[in-house]
Image (cartoon, rainbow, N blue to C red; front, side):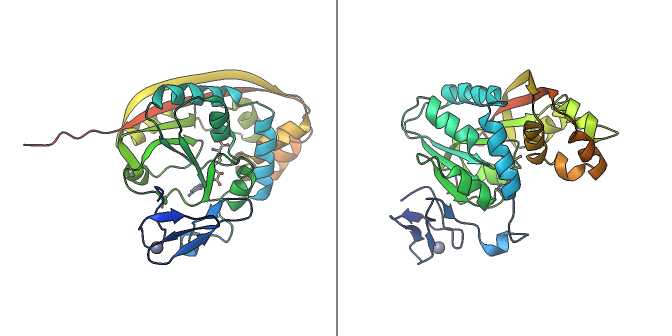
Length: 280
Ligand SMILES: C[S@@+](CC[C@H](N)C(=O)[O-])C[C@H]1O[C@@H](n2cnc3c(N)ncnc32)[C@H](O)[C@@H]1O
Ligand SMILES: [Zn+2]
């Protein structure tokens, strides 16, 4: 048995060589790359939900050049301190191409953790599947295919989280390690793309998350980095929602830029499940 539950009937899923199956006979084949698709068709709003192949390819090329390594290192440090239990279950929700989870798996020495990467984009999971030590799933963060109370750590880097669902899957001592953009994040790029730059609000993040979780830690990660080719700039643009939100003329102007100095400004949050005291 695994901590997975059947997306159709919510009973436990058992892992076999080529598939996962529940006791009621629902079966989900492993793809040749090794991942399993647990996203049911009624859970999709479009035929191919999540990031497209083009976004996935751009993100992989950008991240593999190490521009966001400072984030990966901060996640690892936080995880190293948090992963005390043997066999901890770690789930990266909205894992994209698997950059942060694979960095964790390769660089953090903890006792036999089980790593799960979940994304609604099949293209992202296909790409992530090259890391064989991690279990990859296509699923939505709104309906996570994990048993209630079964997950020790949820990781989320720039990904949408549904708080009640995260709260459901977390064990009583469970934690969320989350990275969100702060005020100055990519400010130079955003200033080039928009007349009015909307500031990312850390206060709104606090308000939203403290309604459900206890905020244990809030670490600011700030750094400067430079992109020195049009290819790198294009990859960054295509992996963010800025691509869809900006006008064709602004994007055209950006295509003439050969180098860009940028600010990385994010917050790493450590949240824990709220403990309720029982009334006697
Ligand atoms: C901004 S990307 C971040 C990816 C990765 N965490 C990273 O930082 O490289 C957001 C990711 O969330 C995924 N996503 C969007 N909506 C989702 C949902 N409802 N459930 C699961 N994943 C989702 C997208 O496909 C995309 O891979
Ligand atoms: Zn079932």
